[in-house]
Length: 164
Picture 1 (cartoon, rainbow, N blue to C red):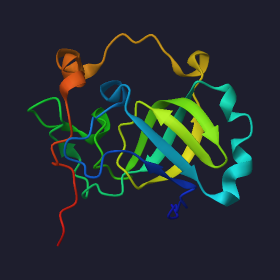
Picture 2: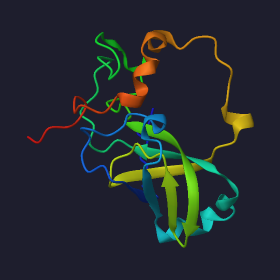
Picture 3: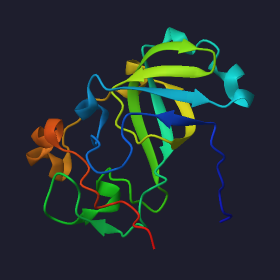
């Protein structure tokens, strides 16, 4: 299969300057504000986005270290397969976060519940639509015994690239 290359459409701004200490999911980042700068050539694509209370940001984990297929996630002390966890070190380091859209001014989206590092390259934006995106689930795997840790769980730096 051919290589796939994406070009950022913008950059995410947040109060988090380094991975360590950053909330690990939007639910753990409640009321943390950020902004999304959409590059000028993509601004036309923002038409009608203000009609949505929430948007899904798709981004590149630009500071994540090289992935291994089994890793120890933030909320457990046991290794799990990378595809059974949501950490940043992945074969394709792509992240998603559903955030609240507060307002838009020109090419800037002001958002809340941001769990993303400042300067993160934005790959895409999609509207969050409960009828499309919410599902009733029967099981949440290994997280079932750990999901209550989310409000206090923060990035501890384990997935960050270290300077050479």
